[in-house]
Length: 586
Image 1 (cartoon, rainbow, N blue to C red):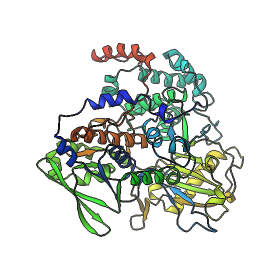
Image 2 (cartoon, helix red, strand yellow; image 1 turned 45 degrees about the vertical axis):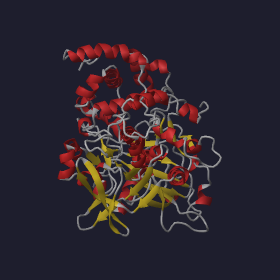
Image 3 (tube, rainbow, N blue to C red; image 1 turned 120 degrees about the vertical axis):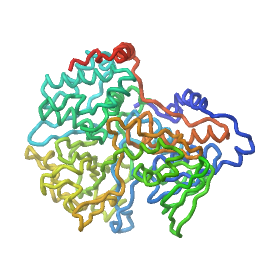
Image 4 (cartoon, rainbow, N blue to C red; image 1 turned 30 degrees about the horizontal axis):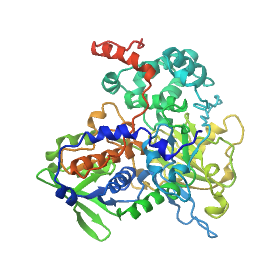
């Protein structure tokens, strides 16, 4: 890995800033600009913290109102009752963190958060995750998918890309060569598709249909259709937009080739619990800059008059309250925004009705604390044969502190953090989906599904006596009367034709701005990166509207391979003529 500094993290931001500066909507008197600087950020997750960061840097008065916990779904938290002997509690989390090499907004923010003696602040707390493993069940060959580093030249031309996918990427899997070739051809179709086809035909096509999964065998469906969507980007192949999944496939391919990453490794994680090495230092920094935080605040309504928000109604630890500000940034998850869309709000901006059509699903974590190290892999683990689409990573080997000496009672040496991505498919122990299992059943089932892939050849990898304890995300709550779970923190999923339903930062209400992973962003996926980008977009829109002046926050785009541009020009003509992509042979 080459030297990475804040300077090269921010490289290219000048062009983005210039483009954004051009969106200013007209002059505002200096006196009014000075007076109208109060911003209420409604939500303290990734989008809200990013918006607050950019706004406080540009001289606004910022207050963040958070319902639950700062950091949102990105946070970690102490597990109550687990500390002993002067140690900290065991670290729990909503789900493990994952920083692909093509992320740009998150690294840029991290580089501006001081952390100890780190030259580049929190950014220096990112470490390479190592080679990932895709363990298969039923005696199938385990796979080190993306474990190799492709030469960028292997991605430059259709024939080269197809050879790379067939001979390297899917080599060792049980996907037949003919099926692997077909899958490679489908990726060539997408990479050579023009923007108009991506936003038109492929936005309206599910990934399952795009790769023709229903016409192929089960192994093809598991690896090519299901593996990519559920293991890498937490989407469901039957309903996920091909435009979204294809964009991510392209980004991952080039990221692992070292293109479009600014020298960063393709797969990074933090070197400690998220709050300790990122969120808490961030909040401390923002508070020191003047940001105010009001926790325990739930937004219950938006008052609208003359096309403006006149106040946000809220419940607080001291009772009902009305939040007043000059500008309002909605930084709440979409399921929290929809109930606020009153007749008055929708009269002021009818386009927000589209938010009601967006879809959320569940992706929550469970942590297994281990008494001994286990030999799986240093990188991420994707159990692509598991009914619940499990992914995970052993965290202690990547952390700077001694796990046993720092956390718990001293007997746990590692945390195997696992995400459950499918809560609707029956498991292998109880025959029930995760959303209808008790917490104990979820633990038993998840442990069994991991063992089914890791120990299918008879080797003992995850013996039962290695387990110290476990912890399930508290957002999952069991309802005995319904014999089902509820989830306080679901995740947006990108479905076909959802782009048109998603808002931009600017709304039809002059002082209300939208941010969150459901907004339109360049990364176009419900991720920390997308949420951060949306927070920046909201801050930039306020900057332009207010007339305060100053440079907008940089907005980065995903790498666009120049070697495919000529094919996209041809495809644009074909699409305009109503014809198939040049490589789309059915």
